[in-house]
Image (cartoon, rainbow, N blue to C red; front, side, top):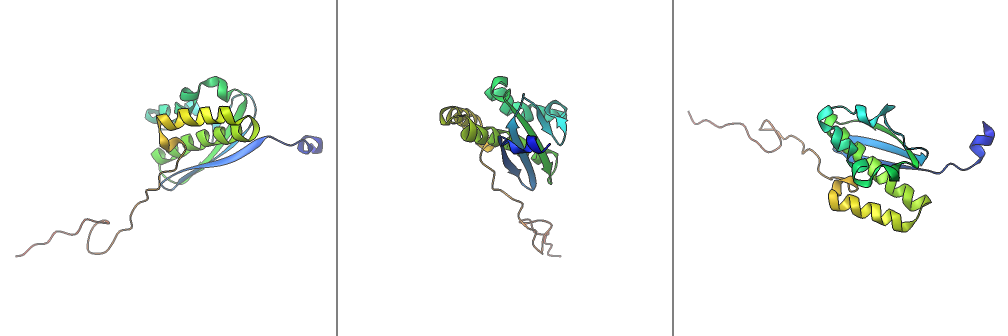
Length: 148
């Protein structure tokens, strides 16, 4: 076991965020596994958003993922924002892995493909929910006013 730990493990750890969901992707040399909270990507919940999860893989092709294993831990947020956090973490981890261990040219190629398709795959969406104020049911809406 000690000998196994001695050789440096090629891995990167990257996070993706959406609203309050945070997904941490651990990307290392491997044979193309992608797991989310210990489950394969294809079993992603909810089923309607499965293609959102598979987008990075579809865009870049299976061959780019064949050399790496990606494990994602995700917490916080709801179903949809978790899905967006996961796909961002997967995309960012692959870009970071290619930059660190492969070469700059292929990293640039991957980055350009992802950015031209959808910027949120690499850049976090800064929008957050606005806090509720008094005098109304929500952040901006006010209670109805009656004169008689």
